[in-house]
Length: 267
Ligand code: NAP
Image (cartoon, rainbow, N blue to C red):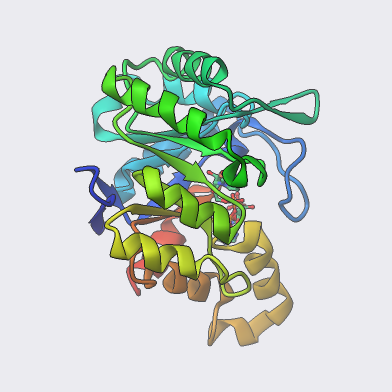
């Protein structure tokens, strides 16, 4: 597994990371056909596969249902081999998202993430943007608090998972890392990635498979997809874009994870 620097954070991350929405949440997701939360045995197999494949980066969030707390027990005893990314600002309860980016909410959220993840620090915390805060004046207070948490040693780096190009570019002014969308049908954030590369900031990619729609395109293409597999193409596109540190692919399938790693390696 190729490792790449996460910008100037001093961290090296696997070029394929594991996204864990599906580990803890089955409501309000955009995956074709929905999703089913994996059993404990299935979750253990997924983490075991990720470990064997050399994946070291795992992405979670308080808004991903039980994802953080499940990871706390799944990674116990092996914590130090993982780079954990979690988020602040979004809560998902009873099928609805609520957002709070105020400094006290950020502080409380990070402290709760540490308890759920059974750790004393996380390597990166991202602002889980609703698409509005990233362009609002309040963002500076949120970042001030993340800087404070970094100085306390509770987080090693911070950034923002953004929804607009303007928000992504603004985040680069004060953050270590951005998480942006990139796939063959969504290229707007290439402008953010290029600027991040220029400034030596870390870049994490979300939705590289268009939240699973690339796999639907492959099914619909039938045998023709063997020549140009849309899933493999999307992964090669994202990992091959200059400036990208890691592509966070969401899956609950060890077989899909292995195929994704092979595709990223050009096999
Ligand atoms: P994604 O990675 O583009 O797609 C995930 C979907 O693709 C899953 O339904 C998965 O199903 C399927 N898949 C993966 N590999 C496959 C393969 N080899 N063959 C067939 N199907 C495959 O979308 P995402 O999960 O929305 O985004 C990735 C991660 O980014 C998330 O898990 C999360 O960590 C992060 N994210 C963050 C934000 C935010 O901060 N606002 C938003 C979205 C996502 P299977 O389980 O069947 O493999």
